Every structure is written in structure tokens, then in C-alpha cells.
Length: 135
Image (cartoon, rainbow, N blue to C red; front, side, top):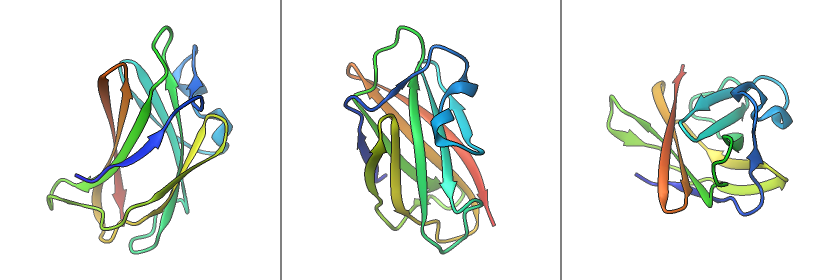
């Protein structure tokens, strides 16, 4: 599996509240993925994702109370039924504090895609997965 690595030094939102608060700075509709220690909130542009067209992903990683901020986040996507992933690597930027942007993602065929976020902190990794249906 190829992963996109997003360095998280000083650019992670700390969320003491519920998952609903995570990613409020992203604006508009967002998808929230809950993990034991972290919450990831993201939006895609365009929304919905169009097969065969590049899209971007804006995301925020929110540590739950008392949990250390992540050192990095890795992103990948795969089609479990077809046993393959994306054919493109995205570029990652941090346009403002606490928000990351991955550009150049592309889902080359319709169907179920699992978008995977690996949150790394203190030598441990927590994997969060969001399932998308792209038509």
C-alpha cells in the first residue's frame, strides 16, 4: 500500500469536545471518522468525487482529551473488492494551522473505496477508515 505522509508538527487541532466539533474550520459539509484516540474530519473537492477526475482532500486530525498530538498522518485509498489502490500520489500542504490539503488524488474506477488514515503518535499507529462509494 502506498501512503501519503502528512507531517503534523504543530498543525493539529486539539478537540476536547465531541467529534462534531472536529474540523469546523473546514467549513461546509464534512465526513467525520471516529477512532479511540483521534478523530479525522475531511471534505473533498469536488463533492461528490467524480471517477477519473483529480480531487483534493482537506482534513483535520483532532486528538481526544489527554492524548498526545500526532507526529504524522498517512493517507491511502484502496478498492477491497479489486485488491488495488490509487495510481496517483498526491501532494500535501498545510494552507493554515490545523488544516491539511492533499491534492492530486484520483479514483480511476467506480465502486467502493476505503480511504485510510494512519495517525502516528508516540510510536503507535491508530488506523481510521472511511468507506466511500464513487459512481
